[in-house]
Length: 355
Image (cartoon, rainbow, N blue to C red; front, side, top):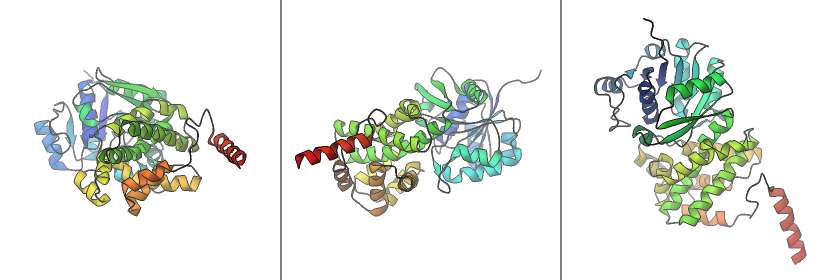
């Protein structure tokens, strides 16, 4: 009898890619996972473990791992690309000879390519020209997904088939998949929140209280949405899982790699020391620089990103940056109800009256 099960390929052997591969297999899909490391692929096939990234997680035995790209992609209906942003385009180019236009391609990577300030789904479009492209993003700490803790995510695409196929492949009793048609907003939210997780980690290391944490996350959300709208995203997207939801988890959890980098910086370590201690890629470090430079080019007011840039790349002490942020201009709370310009004009009039 023909096997009509959904066929899923996962490109990437990190923690999130591994968890997604196992979820899809739990849901009955035929799953193949590509890894660069042949020894790690052998370990997954033999022991059903990924000792490098999720050592305590029992991977569904039906997941077949391989370092051979063509073997993983052969016959796949859905391809999940879970590759760090720096290597994303390289891996997509490596995969291209075995990809087909009818396949659905979904990025799970929360990062930005420096050249051209491009998000990962844009790279998928440029390298393949395919129509079925989406983004998976949300408050999804891989270790908690692996522990089968209740989690929600967002599949964003203009293409209804992409949204429906991903919901079918990954939705289960502990991993709920919501849909969005604002691919750019969802993807940008996933990249931007990494910046503010670094700031939250710094604040925690400096002993700042809950009032500070609340202010930091709320102003981060305002800054994220301000930048995203300037880039063409829908501000309402940031009220959902890929915006405020992802921001909360990455700014509150010590499991977040970006939070841990920020904490080390708050303790007085250098950036190199913080990254070395982490031992993994923290996408937010590169994102701080890219977003700060883009905001400057576009004239978008982003004091948190600017302050973090000074700490990470110009040697400004974290505590000094925190004080400088409190000395910035006091403007509107929610800019989509009261504009910054209106507040600035009122303050000018107030200054004239005082005179």
